[in-house]
Amino acid sequence: MSKLELQMRNYRLTTAEILYYLPDHPVLLQSFIWQEYDLAPRFPELKRFLDFWTREIEGRLHSVTVAHKELIKPEQFTFCDHELTLH
Image (cartoon, rainbow, N blue to C red):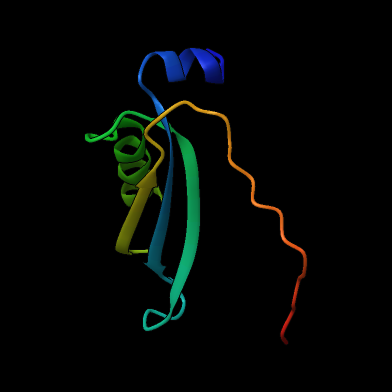
């Protein structure tokens, strides 16, 4: 199914930051970003992925932060005159 077809069925772009403990260093956290079209508020695709993670991957989950975009609309751009980069 195409992305547009998913959006027409109320799927929205969902991003999850998954923090997990490294298997070899259990006191250290690692971040993994997951992004897919999913149905809010139950997020069945994310739940399926987290079930897979728990079953198949050694890194124990610490936390999951979820964000999703509600509406289909053109993206908004803001143009800037200057850019500053700090190291």
